[in-house]
Image (cartoon, rainbow, N blue to C red):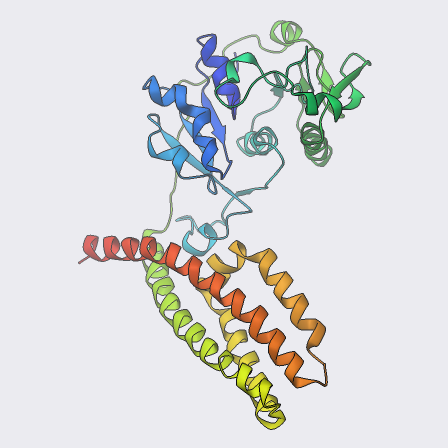
Amino acid sequence: MAYVFAVGSAINALLAHEIYPHAACTYDPTTLNSRVFEKVVEGGISEIPLIFGSSVGYETLINYPGRKLHMLTNQDFVAPFFLKNTDSESLDIVHDAPSIAVITLELLLKLGCNPIILVGQNLAYKGGMIYSREINNIRSAEMTNEEQLTAIKVADVHGNQVSTNDGFNRMRQGFESFISANPQCEIINTTKGGAKIAGAAYVTLEEVIHNKLSGQAVIEEWMMVSGGYDLPMINRRVRTMNTELSNLQKLINSLRELLKELPSLSQTNNKDQLEKIFPRIDKIFERIKKNEFYTVFLYPMNRVQFELMANQIAVVRFNSNLSVKADKVFSELGNYLLLCMQDIDLIAPTLHQVVDKIINNHS
């Protein structure tokens, strides 16, 4: 009568009742996310496809026994560089959200689902529990003392007050923002005693089944894949990125050599040389910021550190005391480049493996 999509740890509550959903959805980039699917892996359950956000932690995917399909999220800066659809249409992206449930809502809308029925989306504490008991492998289901003390009150689907936390409340707001932006899709909330979600009418699941889900809606072979990615372009992009990595390493080395001159010039207060070296530093750093390896990998990984560094340097940019400016640039930019180099060491081996595989497959 309906397709069933399990969001995040809800897969464990379903498995506890021997319910296999049509797919499970996940997107969490942390290493702990793999624990959500331990029961699927340990049981060798291959019948449940996993739809994962492309920025998910790789640990989740390594041992997953079922089919795997991906959805590109707007927090994924890598895929748009490498991927292009064979039909020339632009890549379809789902937007990041506080909850996999909200992301799945957008996914289902893109897949043409209407209505979409929310089940078990309490977004609040229920009976002193923060999660279903079947999710104990992720964390204790019972509320902690701190959670009880910091709980906030919101309206529930029956018009009463229910306790929740800031995280669940942001998830609720994420649902409401999406529903408000997509009035063409009917969203029904069947969660008894859960937080009220504005824009989603509350109807019991029993009523929905009786009034909405008559007849056969599910197509058994529903995962029909058409089109694909432009593989020759991926090959070209991988090679381009490898070249960009080499160029970036040379630029960083050149910039670090320039930075090494700053302490001695500062100590001797050599204004003439300092005035000449700052434009050279700016020029190389501008080239670094335009490098595609930097824009695709390093900047997204170090966005906060970049802003902090840029703000610190901006404070002394027009300082007439060039020695003070030199010391600040040496410290802040030097530390930032060190972070970039550490990330290059992390990423480069994987990129080189991909390049080698492509070369071997097309030699």
